[in-house]
Length: 80
Image (cartoon, rainbow, N blue to C red; front, side):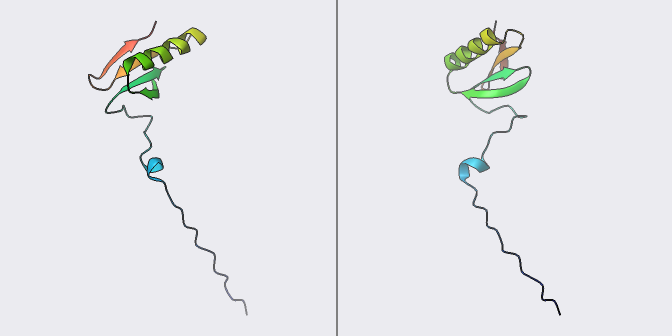
């Protein structure tokens, strides 16, 4: 007669930071975001930091369409 074996129960502890991970398909509610080819990438607190990152990216890869998204006004500005 076979006795069914019990499988151990795995407990997964999720960190609070992991629970509140930003979604790539939704624009953020605050700050500035570098948008590459229509996809939200890096989030910044200041517009200067976002523009600097966007200019570096555009200089390295000129074929990309790089924009800065302002979450407060919901406006996108093209980086040239």
